Length: 49
Image 1 (cartoon, rainbow, N blue to C red):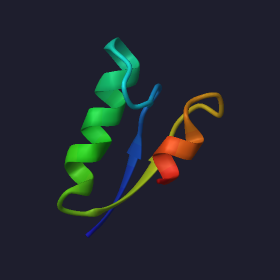
Image 2: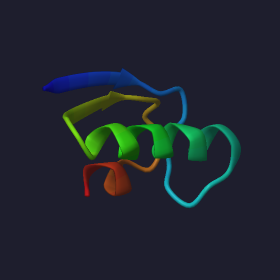
Image 3: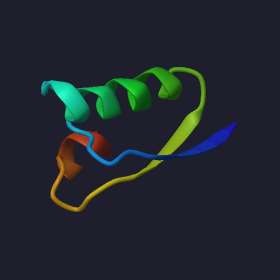
């Protein structure tokens, strides 16, 4: 299944909102193909990896 998620903040290895966004995406991606909408200043390189 393809899933589109919106995360206000999303970056690996960070706490609070950044970490919650990242971990949510990571867990859903274990079972589905995931696309993420987030702010342009978050860790794009890590998200695309």
